Length: 271
Image (spheres, rainbow, N blue to C red):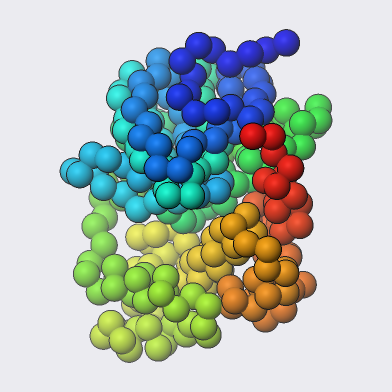
């Protein structure tokens, strides 16, 4: 039976899988844990529950992001006060070389809070949990998608820097996602035309304004499912969904699991 390589993580592995060229593991970190690690292979780290915060003040990132860590580079994080459960996707050199034969791929440290790359990473976690033979093919395909989209996003971020008004618009969405967030209202608040806001938002963040609102609602619901005993209908309303049915459809589309499956997965996970 496959076991994780020595030094794979300083956290507590819950379950893991190996696909040719890839190692995936669900890892738990204690509340407030400081994580300082260096790995021989490149990896993505996706917080599923809780959050990780980079400790390098020059590269401070908000928690809850998808992180890319290059091979051989030391990284340091702090787990949130509630702890963190993460999906680690580690890629070996042969697998990355095959990917690079088709297109340039990400080589520098990066993090992503939203957009298609985060959606794909959460779908990857859903396939990882299925553990059937079909999921092996899906995992490799989605892992390539994560790498490709992260590479595209990083290249775009290098070219573009968000103007202050756009950062303010995103902050307004994040503080009001549970309300009826209108593009025209936010545009007026930051002093730009709605069409200009929509176009710049999509170009900079690689997602539409409306999709970003939905992502923030799903993220809030995800946290509530594992940290509270609230009913699905109450979580749906608090997150801003019109009803439980709409919430369930959007959540499964974003994560690959239904809200009930997601909650059960964490409450049944061995400690």
